[in-house]
Image 1 (cartoon, rainbow, N blue to C red):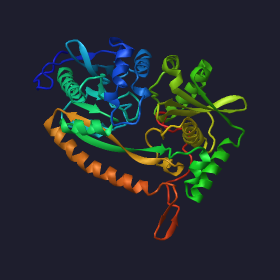
Image 2 (image 1 turned 135 degrees about the vertical axis):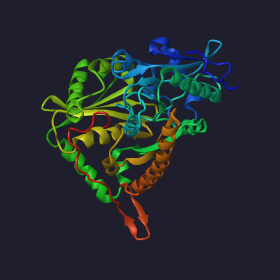
Image 3 (image 1 turned 180 degrees about the vertical axis):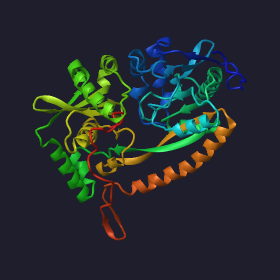
Image 4 (image 1 turned 45 degrees about the vertical axis):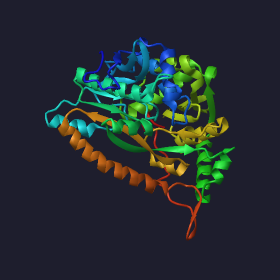
Length: 425
C-alpha cells in the first residue's frame, strides 16, 4: 500500500506502508517510536511494555497472532523520503474476540441488515485491555503530521482490504481527542486501578481506609494463606521453564472452564521470558511443595499491569491475595504509581481500586451504521460517566460528610471462583 488517496496538505508528501508483521521493522526502529518523547508526551508512563517490539513480536512468533487466529498483522508505517515518521500496531480481524471493547451488537445488527462487518481493522495490543499510545511517533517527527498520516493510512487500508471499520482501543485520552477531531466516533468505558498515594508500606495504604474495610482486607489476606499457602514473587532470571509450565496449567484450567478458548499458547510465555523477563512479574502460590495458583504481571516504569490469573485449587480469597494485594505490595516496594488490574470487576472497589475512564475511537465506513453507532455512543458515554461518579462514592477510603465519618459501601466481597476469566485478574 502506497500513499493514501485524496491527500491533504499534511499527508501529500507521505508514503504509507502496511507491514505484514514486525519482522519487517527492526526492534530498535519500532521501540524508538513506541518510547519516544513525542509518543509519551502527556502521559506518565515512560515504558509501556505492551507496546515493545519484544512483546508484540512474541505474540506473532508464537502464532497467537496470525491469519489463522483471526489477527492478521498489518502494521501501519508512515514515511517521507525513506524516513519513518510513525507506526501503529494494526491487525485485520475476522471476529471480535480478545478485544475487551465489545462491538458484537454492532456486528450482529449490521449482518442482519445485509452488511459484512468483518473484516475490520483493529489498532490495539492483542488480548490486552491496557491503556497506552496507539499512534507511535518517531523521535523528532511532528506528532500532528505523523498522526494525520497514520489516520490517512488506516483509512486507505480499510478501503483496500474492504474492511467495514477501524477500531482504536485503549488509547490515551489525548489521542482520543485527536481521533475525534479527525472524525472518529468516541467511546468510553471503565476499569479499576489502584493509586499509590505515597505509601511506604501496605499498612500505610490500609490506614487510608475506613475501619470496617481495613479489617475486611486484613481478614481476607489472613484467610487466603491460612491453608499453609506461601507466595513467591519471580522476575528476570528467577523465572524458569518449570514456573511457566505451572503457570500455563493454571491459565489453561481457568480458560477452559470459562470459554474454552484461551488466547495464549505455551510458546508465547517462553518467548516473553526470553525477550523481556525483567519486565515480567510472576506471583506464584505454593501449598505442600506444589504450585497451585499464579498471576502474571508486566512491569512498566510507573505502573504494574496485572494480566492473567489461574489456579488448580480453589481457596477463599486466594484470587484477591495473588492478583490484588500482592500487586499492591510489589508496587509499593518498587515505588510505582499505580496498579492496573485488568478489565471487569466491581469487586475491586472493596480492595482499594478506583474507577477510571477508558477511551476508544471508531471509524465506520457505512454512513447508516455510523449514524446508528454514533447515537448509541452518545447515550453510552453519558451512562459510563454517571456510573463512574457513582462507583467513586463506593470506594473504601476514609472520608467525612455532614453526618460525620462515612465508611461507604461496596459491592459483594465474596471471592470469584476459579472460573474467572483468565484475561483479566
